[in-house]
Amino acid sequence: MTSRTEPATPPSAGPGPVEKDTWETIGRLARRFDAHDDARGLDQAEQWTLQVLKISEETGETSQAVIGARGTNPRKGDSHTWQDVHAEVADVIITGMVALARMRPDDAEQYLGRQLAAKAAKFLLAVSAADRPSPGETA
Image (tube, rainbow, N blue to C red; front, side):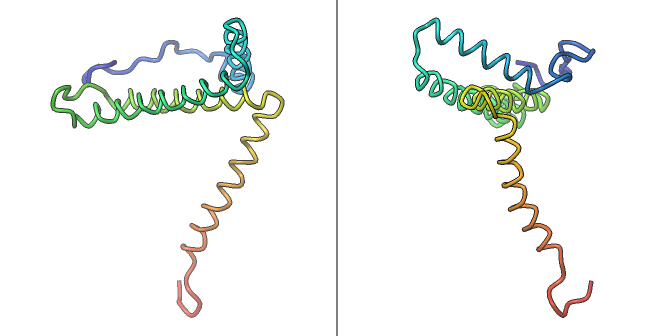
């Protein structure tokens, strides 16, 4: 947890393995967690369930960071910065990507691409239509 006045410092300034190939890194993480859970004797459904619950845990940490950045908990005050929120949002995204890679190891990247395209088409079409003038209206 970073205090409100401390700047968040990234762990390294240079490019790391994630910049080279995000999905390769996500796949490596997924395989690492699969091996760990296999060694613990967890079946696939248990592994997937726990990974999805991990997304909820990370989302909760993001919520705590927002509350801390806004200072809305009188007992804790300004306990977080918006940089903390950014880091927690990244954790949610990474955890979600790892979950998808664990459940769809052969096509997680393509599946996410298709899902993104489908969702974006719905929302971007709605925005485009809202931006257009009505029939008979001048721009």
